[in-house]
Amino acid sequence: MLSARSLEFAQTLVRMNTVSANSNLELIDFVRDHLAGLGVRSRLTYNADKTKANLFATLGAGKPAGVIISGHTDTVPWDGQDWTIDPLSAMVQDWPQESMRSDGEIERAEPRLYGRGAADMKSFIAIAVANAEAADLLVVGEGKVHRKGRVAFHEALGVRDRDGDE
Image 1: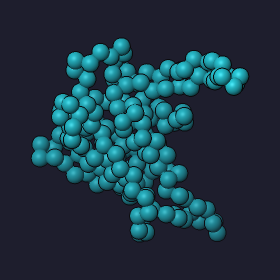
Image 2: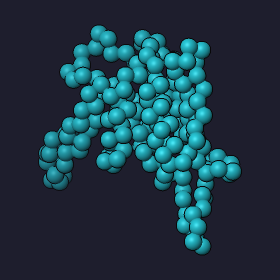
Image 3: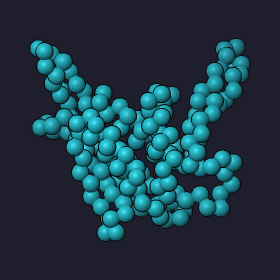
Image 4: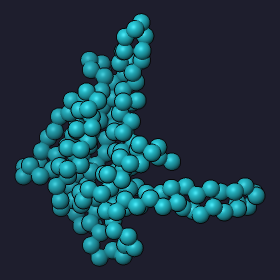
């Protein structure tokens, strides 16, 4: 289950229309600004039209990267699909409803996020970025804060056709 902070971040990302034919700059700028608020510098590379960007950010200056967190920001178009909700609504609904399992235990409802990109890949990006401060592996010792490790982020612009093929 997503933390409240990660869920809020994921909802923000899902509400951004990053269908492959559209720009992803709103999302990239949002992530860059969040990381900048943590003191993390990002590097952007753009497509030829400057309508899409890749984001590269590294936490833990001066150390070799131990983990690379990589994701894509584009989503597949939903034209002609039978959605029962707005694909950009980022609706949260409890599912399944509370029920009795076969072993007699009560299964509690768990909140689920619905919207285009919620499962692939915006929730992952949200978890990684919303928790970037923790991922930086900060350690306090001898009255100072030390960066223990290094984590590299990469948000790919991705290119998908109407069928979702890269």
